[in-house]
Amino acid sequence: MEVIFFLIVVFGVVMLYQRSQKKKEDDLYAKVNIIEDETLKISSKMKQSIKKHDIKTVTELRQMGSEDLLELLSCSSDILNVFERRIENIDDGYARYEEFLQDTNVAASRAGFIWQDPKKVKKTIMDREMVKLTPLKERLDEQNRLAMVVFEEDLMGVGSALKAIPEKYRVSMILRKMCEYLSDGETDSWEGCIKIYKNDSYHDKVLEHYADFGRKLGRIEQNTALTAAFAGLTALNTGRIAAKL
Image 1 (cartoon, rainbow, N blue to C red):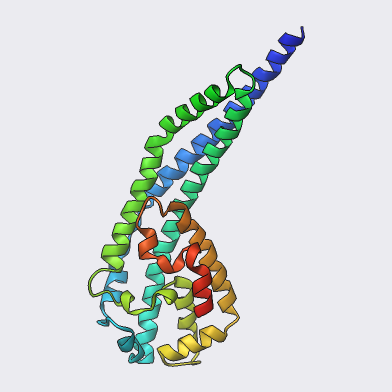
Image 2 (cartoon, rainbow, N blue to C red):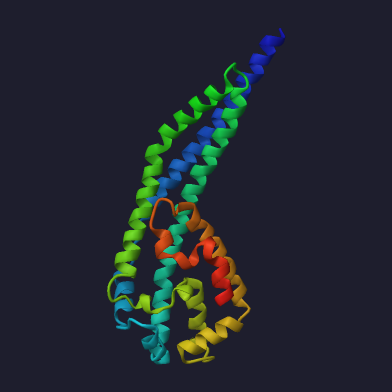
């Protein structure tokens, strides 16, 4: 009687687990579908706005008048924001993927102790899930690759004015704030933007953004060249950057 009761309990637990995992798996696939449907696209208007400014160095950036500087920083902020939101969206897909595997790992460990060879049971379950989810992981990796192609070719390609903006300020939040300084008449130069920004309380919020975005890049850096392209934003370098800002 006790054995039957035990088996019923085990069966119930397994069914609940399978139902929970099935929902998470469905949510994961739905998330990847959304990511694929919402591909990264930089509008022609944005591209034209950034290409309008033929500058390549920080020296040229310093020599810009306030109106041209405002226009450059504004379009740069908009473009970077599109890319950053894309990366955050892809990161969410990776986060759900990792969460699903972690839950599966925990459940497999518990299930293994029911049988005589727990390690073998756990390995069998994990191998099965990894094989099943490999195509989905490859789809995430491909979206990552495509995002970097757009970043390198459309945003950081030859002649892009974005290259003139120092890497540690090449973040949509920072550039957007600098646009406010220029619009409000607090400054009319690049040097003025930097000086005000360093003394602004907003600075602390941006550092939090660095850390958060750095964690997102850290999650997916093993699959793409993101670390090389956005080295200034990785969690590894956050402390170094904070000291310089």
